[in-house]
Length: 301
Image (tube, rainbow, N blue to C red; front, top):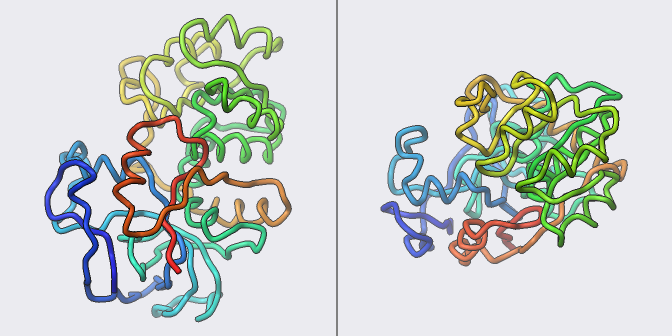
């Protein structure tokens, strides 16, 4: 099968198209003919070697942790899914013509292949953050960095759970957040003063999706480090804030929650760019540059 791979760590140029044997579904797994695979920041962090200590991978390596496609092989002890079903989920080595899924949900027809291909990891990450915060109906959540994939998933999942959401984003993305029903404001210095008028009853919880710098303001707004969870700011622990990596447990139950919400028109995921598999390196470049609304994906015929 065709796949994108790298033999050494480095820039996007180390990615190249290769022919490799097809993987097969083991017990509890399914295999799909990939129609779209998502690109996440962790993919290029693995590729450039910055995660070698925390997330080592053997080389050569096929990147990609999420995909959508058509089931063509079902492993032992798997029930409720059959060859020919359309699914999305958490994958192994997803930037390829075939990929093995460990966790999955039915793909709603309301989502395109590109949208579904970039959904699994952002939904799981967002749901894990909300769970760690103990978010409940009637509370106000601040999402710092709300226009990327994880941020948009958090906004929509939180609203579906009955929370009121305020999201920070660049000016270009704020109107989109408002179209989803969230309040929106700028990120960066002065956050406490800007959020105050948007949350007259206070902020109950905050999810730090974007990079470093906002944690002190999020603590000030919520009143306690215990009310803040970080996904993107690795300095969180310095402030007594939980930094979640998934090592404490995953929230893959949320894939089916997201599928149901998408089918009901209550969750979507914009696709910033959909590129051919062979242009995965370009997708990595765009992701590294940041400020992507929604998801980047590679698509296969």
